[in-house]
Image 1 (tube, each protein chain N blue to C red):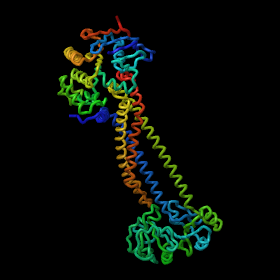
Image 2 (cartoon, chains in turn yellow, cyan):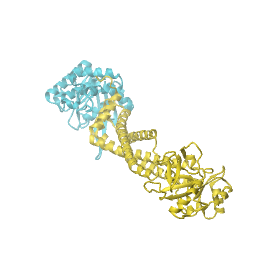
Image 3 (cartoon, one colour):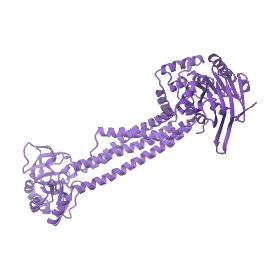
Image 4 (cartoon, one colour):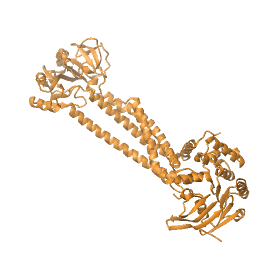
Length: 410
Length: 222
């Protein structure tokens, strides 16, 4: 019949049946824990995803410093892969002089021209034409994911990771055919995702039709640059090179990776700390709520507990049974919360992430294994707060005399 | 043998301490059927609780077969209750979420003195002995009050205790069921040689006992 039923099975069965005995209360408990766990699970996954996205975006940056004209706005998320499109320019003579600056190892000039008049984009979208020097480049070619089986040459274009053109296809830019030479990997940096990268020689060939269509704009003047990316020599510090550059080249602005990354990481760290603090507060408040609820549950069941003690249940058995019941309830709540979180993230993915993606700000989700680990940790924590919340009322009930419990006087 | 020496119990209440039992000396020989009688609030249930290791006395000692039970540790006392005592309370004391067979086997499973298969076999035998074997898989709410009481007695006997303590075990039963339960008690007392201590305010039930202990205002009455 039930010969295989042991005491643990009975306790587990008691815990389950007790949860089923007061369905509305159990539902409220599960809902509260599910909301808490769901919020924490979703928050943790999103924050880790944001952190990973930022990390991917910044750890791949090839340049240590960027020199731009003073007054140029710099988008820090993209700054060290490319300069920003601007009418402010630097004279290209700065390249040779920067190469002689102490601590500078590589100098990679870039010129960016943003236009909606290239005649290429089907919907008249803005296009960033980014001219670079393949010989000194440090931020474009390292991202080449696929390319034709030959060196890049005049008339070639490299497309950003989110563009749809295929290798070897032809793009008509300002009326001139360009061959898609390569495609970049996804960089998580907007300008790189949708930019069209050409050599300075190709830009020179396009300059006349560009002037005809767009007029004489500063970036189209000869010998002009939008910015210069620097790679520092081993041992050189950004501070050292920054001061030297500012002292030698008036009218420039220096953006260094280190300070940007530091401030972003610090900002992100503070944000994550804040989220962590909120998570701790949520956990503590849930544990308190579980504690209050289990105080009520235990008060209601004091006669049953007294009876168990009377027939020989030890204190540890009473505590174990109540903790198992609380842990089981909150673990179920945790599982429901994680499922809820997954639904929320799917909605999030279809709305905000999609929107960000379209804006050229890719969102890198954590892989399934990490999400699973976070879910398991959330469920474990949910079970833990249930057990922690029930610990004091369970301990209090366990130390009462059985007769006091039976007489309902705890 | 059961021996109480100067046993007293004081409860702390909002209106101050209330002395329920005021120093009782009592001896009940092994195998005896003793009835503790008295009016409501006389302290008879409190005395039984102290005798049964359920409520710590404010002073005095309780010995069962030369074991001073209130000198035992918490776990030792739990084990002593489990192995040597059986309880029948005045309320329906079956766990409502467990089947009758589980309720009866529970003390054996709690004490871990037997493997679960043996515990369930013993529970089945007891249920058959009390004529409720057919309700083994039923839940308490599915059987009558008298059948529940018989299941409670079966549970009290599962570990073959030396003493059975019953607190007004028939207070909520009809006369016929009351008689059946009392018949069971007599049978247990005679066939097993088990000491039986029963609290009751029913004098006709008390007259069936070998020894009657009268409590009034927390003291033994003459």
